[in-house]
Each structure stands twice: as structure tokens, then as C-alpha cells.
Image (cartoon, rainbow, N blue to C red; front, side):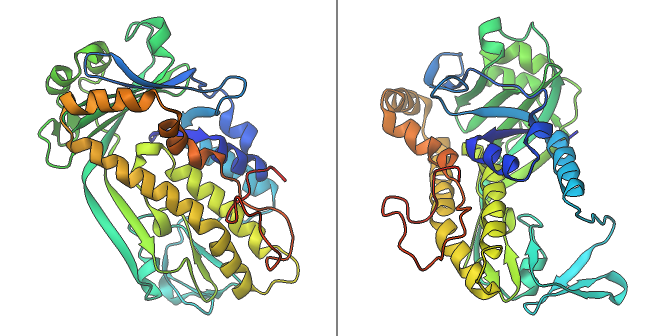
Length: 359
């Protein structure tokens, strides 16, 4: 079934742009708030969402998003080919498959994840940082008995030491949990979570944790940060975790990737632009906003090393100011430029990289 996903305004905009929004959010959970909490359940920071004038965020299952994307692609006439591994790509647009097959394309889009083999096949220089922390994901059945009714519908992130526990209702039937900790933390025992150990860290979530007993970890991922020297080489463009991976502290990995994909499609579709110019325009307009999101998410890892006695009042104080929430929500307001204007025309001086308006 895979993990739960957060879709903020920018990701929802991207899905709407390609006709996949309705299918993706059908039956999705819309929480009233995101809260950061202490191990005992005290709220340190609250961001209200999904109300009039508020940011929108829905949580869904990964397989539902994939199904919506597949249906939208078929409706658009896209041919989907599975069981066809790509071994390498070349800047001139060659795509090398197994058994010696080679196809040539006008544009090759590489989005094969943080461990991208294709990224290396074009000799592209990049920075890749493997972080100390990662997350184990588990899906449990929804139950009214885990938390008080007013809390059970919220998106909750609790802190203790270097551990975080993310509680995310995704559907009326499913709750997604992410256990964030150091890669060598003994509280993650192979394919299972040490429920007793995590319950000692987060006593306020003991009922939730009890439901994870005997439930295998869906997957473990060590967090990484990736920054490419350039997002394209010849006729090959890179996006998603292959180009701009980030730790998931903002819940923006997927939203950033989808928004950037729409921006790429818009750039190469502008009349009068040759592909090299279109790819340069795409990167120039989009990269600053993407990298601001990356930097904010990467900086948030620093909270992992702050003792509870210092971190709790620090986060509580940040929650009293609008600047902290604005920083965390900046990526949700970004929109790709979908107009066909000449890229040499002057930009909006306030937002030269990405427009905020739906055009």
C-alpha cells in the first residue's frame, strides 16, 4: 500500500493542471490543523489549515495518487510501458534499454529517485548528503480509540530527543505513522518497531503505538539532500529526488517535484523557444523557489540535536510568531509560470522566479 502523502496547495495545483486532482483527493482526509507537540502531548505550535483563508493540505495514500496519475496520463493519450528498465541516457536524447535497445527522444525526463543511476550516466556533477536520520513507515487501521476525537483528525508531530513520531490520518480506514530517528536507533528492530521503547518516548501516543505491535515496517528511508550543478544536460532534464531531494520535515518532496514537472512542461511548450533555451528558462524561473524549500527543510534537521528542555520553549516561541509558519508554508504558495510570454521580458520584481497566481 505504501506510505501516506501530504498534498499542500502547490501539489494540488500541479495535479489540477494535468486533470488528476479529482481522482487523487477522492476520499482524502482534510485535517483542521497541523500541530507540533511534546512527548506528553502538549501543543507547542499549531498551524490551522483547510478553512477559509487558510492553506489547504490533504493527506492520501500513495497508491491512490499513482492511480490518479495513471488515469490522467491515459486520458491524455500517454503510452505507459512497464517492465522496461532504462540502463542509461545520453545528452543527445538517446535512451538505452536492456537487450541493446536504443530509442531517441526530443526530450528525456529523468525522475528515478534519489539513487538515480541515470543521473550518473550523463556525467553530471552534484552534491549528495546522506543524513543521520531516516524514517520507518507503518500503516495501521483507523480507530476512534487511539486519541480523543478532537485530536484524532489532526496531523500531529511529536518530539522527544532525536526521535519524532508523525501521526497522519489518510482515509476513514487508514492512519499513516512515520517513526523518525537516527539510522542506528535500536528502537527500530529490523522490520518492526520496538513498541515499548517508542511508548516510553511518547506516552501520550501509547494507544496509537499499541496498534503497531506485530505490524511490519512498510519501508525505511534514510533522508538525503541532493543538489545538481545543473538540472539539464543536452536533451535530458532531471527533476524530483533525482535532482532536488530533501528531508521530509516540510512534507514538500512530492509537492515540489510535481510543481516542478508542470513548470518543465510549460517551459518546453512555450512557442518560439528551442529546447536548450526552454530548459534554461525552466531552471532560471523555478530553481530559486525549489532550493529555498530544500534549504528550509534541511535546516529543520537541526531540531533533532536540541534537548527537549531547550527545543520545547524554542518551538513554542516560534509558534507565537507568524514568520516561522510563513517560512514553513512558503513552498505551498509557489506556482509554476504557465503563461507563454517571452522569457526575455521583465519579470515580476517581487517574485522573479515563480508566479503565485493561477494563470
